[in-house]
Amino acid sequence: MKVFPLRIFFGWTLAVAACAQAHAIEIRVSSKALEQTLAKQLFTGEGGRYYIRGNAKSACYVYAEDPKITFVNDRVMVHVKTHSKLGTSVRGACIGIGLNTDADVSIIPDAQGEIIGFRDARVEHLSESKELNFLLVPFLSRQLPQQMKVNAADLMRQLLANSAQTTGYDLKLDNLKIHSMLVDGDALAVDIDGTLSVH
Image (tube, rainbow, N blue to C red; front, side, top):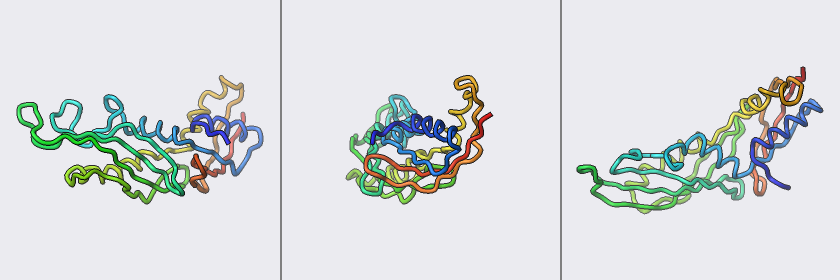
């Protein structure tokens, strides 16, 4: 089965629901769609970076970039590249060491009402630096999964906002509930119930 980005699938779902007032629709979310969510909600710094310590002007810093998502068994694997200069800032220079490494965390998809969410973060790979890992672990296990969450109902309502102009029908989402989410091959399968009103 072909996997489409999140927005395309929601658009397709709306069309089906409008025609049939359907319940129990499955949406298949691609890894690319989840990467786009992370880029939009977390990796918003210069060059698509997220600064864990410091900023683009700091002599000493730690940042992550280039998130890549894959699906492994029942888990969602997130891989990021990290770059750091650890030490003390002296006259605009960082006196210390520079480290470039990769880090991985895996999470389990978790349905939370209208929310496509994640839980049970498990750090799979870190650097060999205890100081760097002290900063990476909270980022990987808490901040990153939190920013991957998507309110499916809000997204669908955004897509419906101009339905009267684009389709000639005023479509309203009455309710939406996510029943289950699981990794299914190369996509995240999300089973939802929802009701649309057509005016």
